[in-house]
Length: 314
Image (cartoon, rainbow, N blue to C red):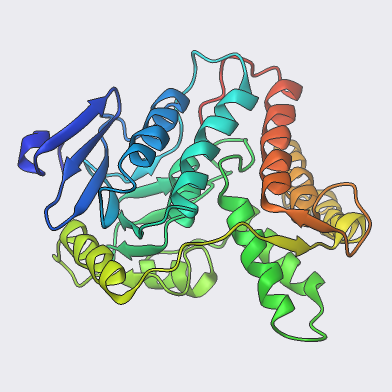
């Protein structure tokens, strides 16, 4: 699908380079990604976060979707020499969405990679096309770890699931999480992505030819009418250094067996550190803000360690 005029999507509320806000009617606004290459810059992400904050009291919900064939296939920040700033700006949008007081629905089509995946995972509901969707961090095409809040969202969900099941051993859960984040199996359909855990189990898959944006608008409206409960900030009791060490052993075995490159190994170790909650003892309570900081610092270290300053697009 080629980019179309914003006016055809709905009355234009405001816009900047790479994004716009449109009125989808009945109190639902659209956050539209408009970059021709389907990417988002950290400046655009920061603008979008502020734009939807300003209208939080005025709307009943938001649908996030692309003006084009790809939801968002990563960030494009070759002009930035500070990977940490890039990470925190993407996080500003994903975190604003996660804790928005009104329902935010992602309408997925095409590539949903890197920063786009971070943003989608922090939406309150997902509507996705049945085919043509490619979601994840796509490490085989680029060598940067998660940094925009998507990993944190998955970690909180996994630990919370463990809290709801007394006596559960979280190490296998964490292993599965690292597997889906770093080395997901190839998938051909959206159903397979949901079954593998790349997309949330609650993802609604549209029928062939169905308009996912309109379906997202209806979903946001219904969630608002039914009484939406905002997501609160949460603390989780993490596996700490014990869990990180267990995940590192998996990475070492895969690396020594020739199943991953040097760069992939570095990413796996960085991801394992975030999943464990950092250099803390097992059982330490860690906040969402702390996990996000671990993501940003891990991204910064990966970029700088590879002398990729000024080339942090992924």
